[in-house]
Length: 486
Image (cartoon, rainbow, N blue to C red; front, side, top):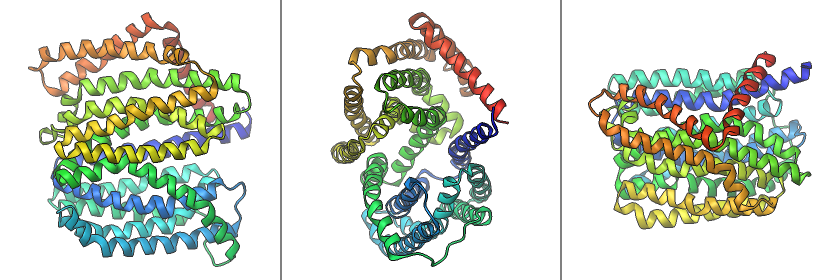
């Protein structure tokens, strides 16, 4: 392999590590602190961070994405982006601070005002380091970004765990987030050679703002679609319900990220390179869907069947209500995993407007279903989110199939074997679990996780032997690539 190939391989590994390691570490911190902090405090912090995320996606992330999309941004572009983001983050922090009381009254949660006043610091620190993060990503320095995630979460998480164990409750969650962002910002400033300045022009600022408005709109619509259920759960059902719901979504998000990050890293450049050859693009599209389904179908089926012992083991007995929400979210998460491939195809084939339309439809349908169903309870809120995905997901897949001239039957054939094998596994686990209730929850997991895996692969071997062989081929190539990248 050439030196350039080694460089690309190392960057790919660090890129995946940056995406997955942070989420896994955050999940571990959450699993530990959940045993010492109330569901109400977790729900309160979830809403506070959701407010931060709204401001971040609208005014910070969109500008970073604009610079990444530029072919060759210069110093004046980076300076313009930095000045815009700093101004936007300061304005956002002031808005959050001033509106904290109103939002706390709206949700009937006075602790929320206290949390929102603190998280103003987070939006400012995000703004102070976003262009540094963008510069590193643009210059393929993913190792520094991965180390930033690891060190900042390790330090912030350790402080949060210590404070949670010693009874600081909500303040421990606030300290964890604030310290994590402060450490991350300091790290990025220390490893980035670029330094912000005033050397820019009005034209550079206007150019960035013109492009950013479209990204801001899409980001905001996607955020409403993905996180609107958490906010409305808090609005209709209170902070404890929001804490339970957010815990379920965290588990689902972590599972989805671990399974799809590597596939996503590979699919986008390959699909992009084949965008002018529709025959090869069609074949690769079906292959990626088949491969994604082979992994995600059994994972989400197993997570659904083993939700109760898994939640009791990871979160403790006080969080058992999470187990009633997980199976519902697992159903929609499988469709979402296939949607990643669909979204990549739409982007690489020049159908960006379609992604915007789907973002709007997702947001509107999500809000409509939640307003109707969420007041009746947590389970109904979860079903509202799942129904939205079950309605729009197949439509998105159907339209993508039409664009690529993929027949519905060909698509069904590529995912049906893994779905069938997962259903066989699910039936066996569902029937067997009642006979193991006398066992310790950890023993149940030790017994049924490998059993489910064996049953799934045997069923898949019977239904589609080639998929099993492809799994082993992929694992062998992945190991070989990592060895060569070193």
